[in-house]
Length: 328
Length: 173
Image (cartoon, rainbow over all chains, first blue to last red; front, side, top):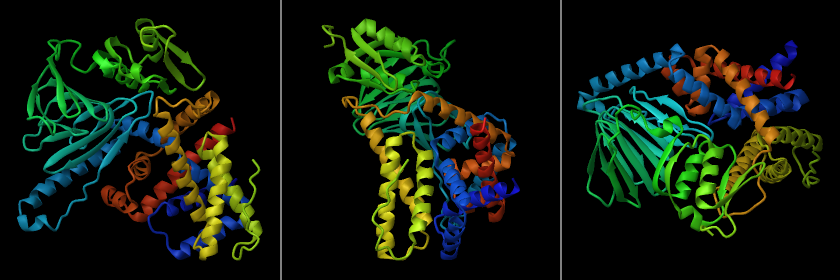
């Protein structure tokens, strides 16, 4: 028993050593010798290495970090204070221009990814809150002069801590949203399609082909291929139920969006991949309020409304035009 | 799963019995990494042939370290290829998503790991999160958390052993 524990401890040590960018020659030789010595060494190392590399561990770590972000553990808070201390130091040093070149920053990018089936809430180093949908990827750089996040995939609701001098910039493809402190939603519906809605304050929307436009509380804009194609004011924004976007409660309000966008939303909650078999169907305009957190219900609804056939296979959901239906 | 060895007759360097041990260790790793049993043999075979090739060209510093690295890279390649196919809505193909029992096993693993992380001392969990999830270097973690490099290494090693024990306990149930 003691022996097993020792082997496990050694194996873990080797996993960590081999995970370093540089491994020196003597360590490598020692590793081979250790592996060659005993089949139990090899088995334990293989298991431990597989565990360290596994996606399941990544998911567990993301979950644990999300619960830490909700304030369960003191360490993260302490490190947040450390961040504050660091940025205070930054400003003190930035005061002296001569120093500025000496302290080339360690500007780490933190990346958050969520899998299909559910999202998470994260708290950034500046105190801003982000609700991230399922199947999303967000990278964050908090710099002393600017806060910058990039939404590579998915949808995010930002409640940005107000800082008078440090703008907060969200990039989604070539669309960017610039704010100081406010609450707004960014939905990256596809590579070239982004929807933005403001829940508090105002934001500036910038695309390569349009002049900057300012969106106020309740405004909603959609950018497709660098052009703003729709802009409307939602009179309910910020009132009653609308202090957070629908999707954070699992809903999606579609007004004239392609079917593929709706399916991508449902996909964020579905463990099984959903395949649309017909390109014409993917472009079909859809309107309505859908509870995307319940994939079966949505698929059932669109099956009736758009004459589709939905097939639930063991590991995939296929959607096809039903024979003779209007979509075929 | 039987995995036939690549041609190694002329192999100077590692003795044949070593290749058997290497193959067994790599197979165990790859099996644990992928839910697709059809990929295991491919990945192990490919890893071995690359390893043999490299070993022929030069004496390897660590044949085991290189073997695990090649296998890990190949798994990533396979995974990417799968994803590319599954993102193609027009593509009709035999589905390669994990089987339901595998999904359930995956969920159990996830909750075992989540529990083990919750049970860890917060500092250890913080170190593991920074290293594995955020990919921070041990030196950066040591600096940020005001720890020695040695202490960071110890936290990662013990944390990983904790997680492994949690998985082993789940398997033996």
